[in-house]
Image (cartoon, rainbow, N blue to C red; front, top):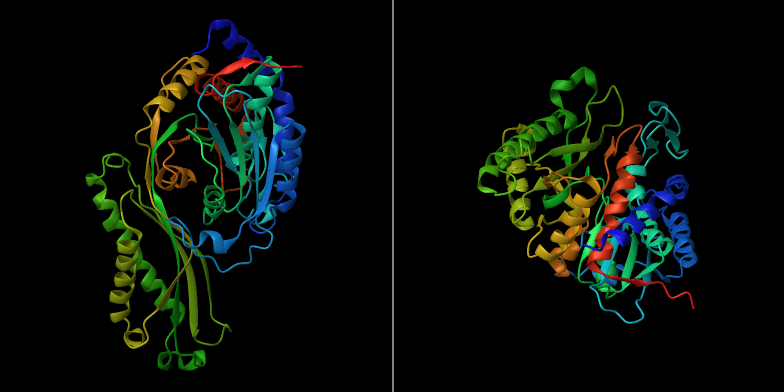
Length: 429
């Protein structure tokens, strides 16, 4: 850890700039950076990086350059407006260890606006909470990356190693944004991702698969319903079979060292459904989209085979579907799980920083969500630490971030940078 005088100066520098950090977080949250609409927010991030003297690389994701790489998730949407922004501060004479600070700019849909207390893209501060879609997941963390550099500069220092700040797209649906940064050649001795982790460090995270099931039926007038085949009701039976698969996978948690004590690590969610054409016609089709988790080490191909087998077995119990099996397709997440391993040095530095700020031990968690850490850890062979502030209602209504927690986590990030990268007096010449 740095000496007491330097540490105090760094902590005070975060406090001195915190109101500006909150204001910047609110401004970034006002951008509705949904899938395919991230470019204005990325332009904003590029301007912020340029204002801080970072070398800015704003580039569009080229699917042809990444589709062959491990970790790529299949997509059937247009990428013409899918832009990443990376800002790099290079040390004049590097002596410390380099670092990537990574965060995602994309947010999930806000849902019915009438369910929000205040508009999701009109950030609202109430006491120690800041509200808005994406403010917790994860624009507060993304701005904290810049605020940490600001605080180091404000205290009169500069990092003694290269630091790269990445603002990526597609974290919420594929992770292809982070993969594109890897393909572009960005590497460092460690990665820090300030996702909203309630001031804990992820030691393991699940993988995720997205898939779609299409069920066919036979349309007839509802007066003769018994002569048709109701695709929506058949889809319900298939969903029940998939919930059985979820239960079977959860029973395997006893064999996993990180998830054995997690109550329900594997979650299967039917997140979208559509079907039928007319209220008085037996529906001839139904489609539903599913997100399911897998354990670290569970192979995606094996999981897909089990999913398809379970659907096939369910179809055999439905007369019409025996000869007209449901169609399964994959689009979006095909993410492996990830365990943080061989990361003793960066974990020790982050633990020391956290303890200096919070006065207690850094807790670790096995997460039932996924993050972009897998790309850096599994494919880039870089230790990827996921550690961020308290946030509530992410992906829900009235999403919010705890500002007291955000200030402390930013202070921890600054002390971590000081320990990991090293500092030297800022050269104002």
